[in-house]
Length: 52
Image 1: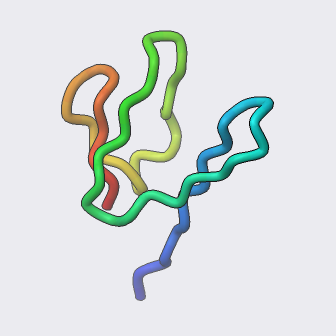
Image 2: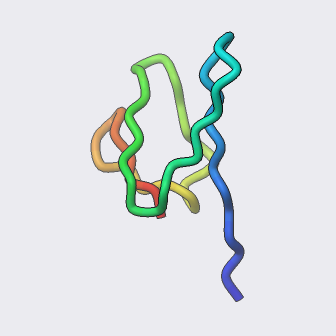
Image 3: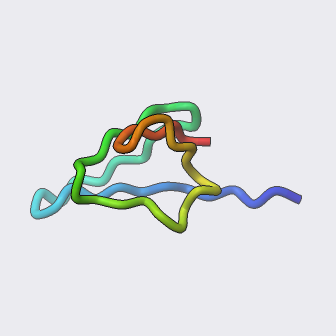
């Protein structure tokens, strides 16, 4: 049975939270890393990911 994971992104110091939709794209800066959550995102480029 597959486990559903919700990815919640917090925007620092703004109080905003973003809940991206499956199949959506996520762009991060060069300093950030998403290692360890490859079951939630698929890397497309070093700083570009697609959400499962």
